[in-house]
Length: 451
Image (cartoon, rainbow, N blue to C red; front, side):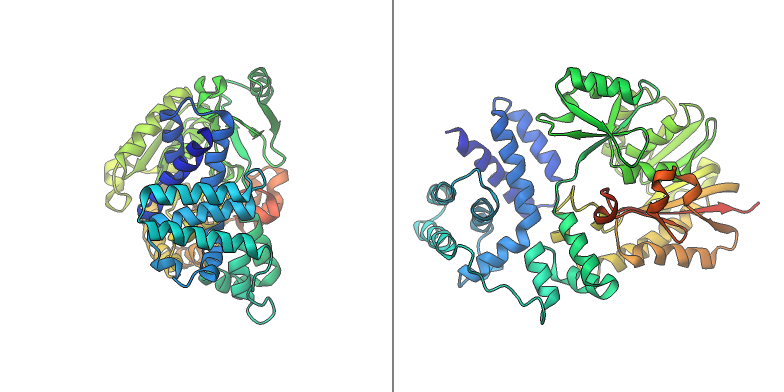
């Protein structure tokens, strides 16, 4: 009966995501908290099924399309999700026997849908088993974008665009890397502990951590069998989950103790707390976000990490003025973006985005950056960051701003990063890519305001 659990919960989660944009990791965490008696294997299977289906959704739908006379878009969402889960198990999971996956799906269909739909599910999945490896893939030579889109499970508009911008090798490597499971990266809180102390404590909890190969103060945790928030080192505030690329953005701003720092679009405060720690808890970090509920999390997060210098402010950045807040030594704009640099961690993003989104985001980013610049005092520093890979949201926005704002001098990112990260800069910018650097795809540009 236990096997049903992970699959049934995965089905609920994926069906919910199909109908409403929410964060899969938060949903899974809530489910696991509710079903605390679930065995470890089941917990692992639930996560594997949800993220696996999200990663490979495009390819699973292509298989569905090949097997059915009804287009995937016309199949009822409940049946579509059921088929995706079963097909994922058939094609990608060794530990579930294919016939068991089929029977499980048919059983669920019988319990929840009219009889003919259970027959439809059965027919499609049995045909999938019969086909084995014989599929009529798009031609790599004559239809490279279609071929990449199907085989690596990325939207066709993206593979088309990427092939035009960076060519075959780069696109293929990026898509492959984006399907990998990202390592769990944490940042060590220097107010409380050293890397060695954290590694020792993790070891005592039976968890294997290692020093990050690319960044001081960051650790990679392998094969964690439980939620990070349950670990003693987390509860004591010694660590915070944050990818190395995201940590590099705070380094690029390089705030000093005693300064006034403004963090716009602060969210849950991953970067705000990092900035405060780089400042040795001296000075002030004003953390702005328009979602008050995120700032609640930020407050708890700061408290857990012993950070006392953050002042959360629930406001829309575009309505904020320097008259209210004064000016700052350093301003960080970690702008809303299309998010394609973080697909390893958020695979659902690929399917939510539209071909015009990078352009739409770039319009908003230009407005936000212009507004952010108003808060920088003379001689102060401004950093613009995204977690995406599109030129128009990155270099495009920076070049436009630099052209129109003579008072802001673009600075080379390299000197502000430690030696190992020098290879992560191109031209003047921080540019990380999962397939080159093994970290999320971030972009960062830095200006100094001339006195």
